[in-house]
Amino acid sequence: MSERISAAAIRLPTGVVVSVRPPLRHHDCFQAARAQGIMFGEMHGGEQGFVTSEGRFVGRCDALPIAQTAGQIVGKTQPEDKLFSEDMW
Image (tube, rainbow, N blue to C red; front, side, top):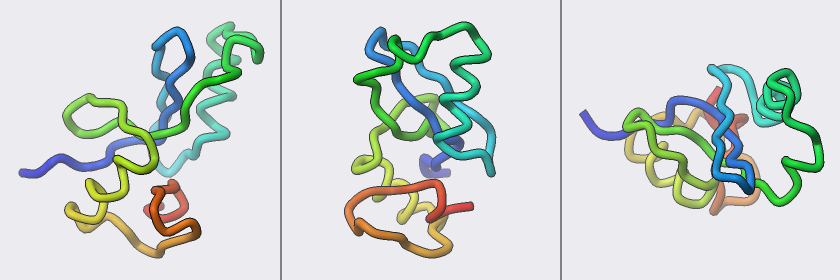
């Protein structure tokens, strides 16, 4: 089975990855981080992306071909070169 996109996620500048289960979105990742006691300032400079079925964090650009290959795109939003959770669920 090929790698798939499993969840929306953010990677904080510290390297900590916070993810949420589908159909939750990136804003939910920020709420989950705050619920874990992570302050907004600690999130500044983080990266939005996804966690894959292999447990890897991938940015929006790297996530797009994974989701396309796995047939996970239900409708593509702009920009065309980046994956958004809205494209999938």
